[in-house]
Length: 237
Image (cartoon, rainbow, N blue to C red; front, side, top):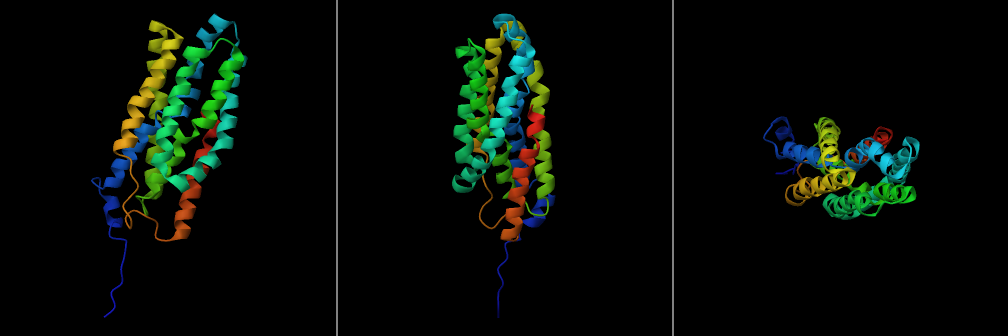
């Protein structure tokens, strides 16, 4: 009698709202909403007026920060993909989030010249790239097979929450306490939200559950996840 082992016992669970993978999607979506796209690039427009008033820079000069940061992010994403493959998503995310938060606070503490602001944003693109979508999406792909595309779509859509709540939050702090407090607030929120979610809850699926049925399928999904992140780069401006 031949017994054939199968690892597809978890696939039917993907159709249930109680399936743990959907909780991973929700956790990833919330954590992703605090990423560089939302908190650094998306919020930059709110700081243009106060920065211009204090330092005399015009809109075009300040906007260069987003341009340079996006370019550095695009160049860094393939390296982040390699690091995620080698060390796993959590080991890339946790230090990247902390570094990103520190760089997000840096303008409030160190900026006195335009070149300093530009350098900080370039570093956000390079060193903060690991706090972007790619590591989260890689974890999500370990939990899903037949519903993988839907799971990634929900996570990416949920991450857009950051573009909804960052402007009113940052504007409130800037109006009441100044632009420096605005940067410090965003840095604090990044650490307070993303670090606990990644540290305590974000996990790859157990071996044999939520994985692709074949290596080719896994490679395709991972590639698609990275392409999705790269395709979003123009939006981050």
